[in-house]
Image (cartoon, rainbow, N blue to C red):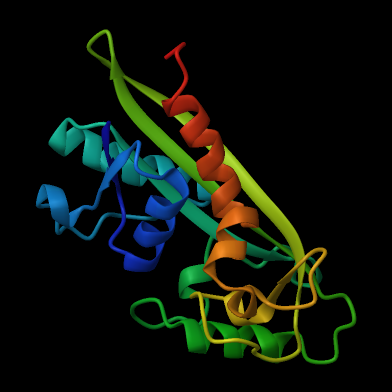
Length: 198
């Protein structure tokens, strides 16, 4: 089975391929010749995921899924949320600047509770028409007081998942890929893709 993952993020692509395994061939945007800067202007994670998947499906006519992920911090009223990748402003996704801003804003705060939430939108063709599905995964945890670990990407060095004392960046990809928000959303996607009732 072949399906397009609407991302240019090599870390996400590798992570998704590891989680889905050999039974599903995941193509990147580059694999299908898409080099567009796909809009992500919706006010919700769900909206952005649908927007990206729909963009690729409409232009390439291929089954496609897209994800959007947000880090939601309780003490910051759910921020950075849908703005997680560009929290510090500027161009591109500057993980170091995003972490620095978040740690600065949380200085002196006792409530460090947070969660990662991933929403995956899948658009496929059924009976000649596009059909849309969404799958969500989340993991609770806390924001550490400083960066810890060197693996992973994004906010991994400052997010400690519930039940662990080490950050995602310290736990390594094997453990992270088995418990993460993205792993949980992808597991639901995979269950659907591999089901006999599709």
